[in-house]
Image 1 (spheres, rainbow, N blue to C red):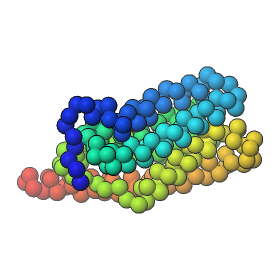
Image 2: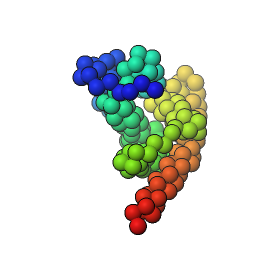
Image 3: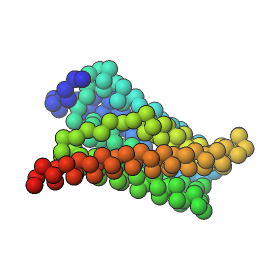
Image 4: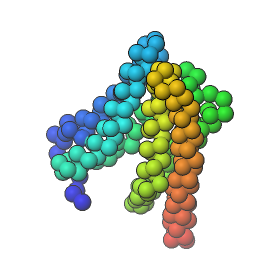
Length: 201
């Protein structure tokens, strides 16, 4: 693994620019869903979200391929992910695409993201790294596909009737996987916290 590049010029490296674009997509996504009426707003938001999801994979791949990994990128990448996912969930609840009991799925996902952020910060102070599991990757995939489908919403249903129902099902699948993977992070955090207290005695 290559060490992070300290040179400031890598703040404008291609991987980091893609991360900045993902952050910039958050207000653009909100503008499309809140202020552009009809199917046009839905499809614009859909393609913005799909583009953001692609850059989530692409920026990490390019950083490794081009040997442009940096501390700035490592810091901003998870922030960008949580911003775009959190904004999408809130907007979908706001416009009624996700409602009723399915709101609990959004609450579960949002709470897990906050929990994991706090645990990662705590574990980083202990120089402990929690590796991303295959299950966590499946969770992310289900979550991104669900959100993309639900963002298309009624516009998508006019092309593929019932696609929003599939999106809701995938959202619940992501919520269940979220609980599972979140428990893994919590268990690791508690274990390391107890080890630190044990050594301090």
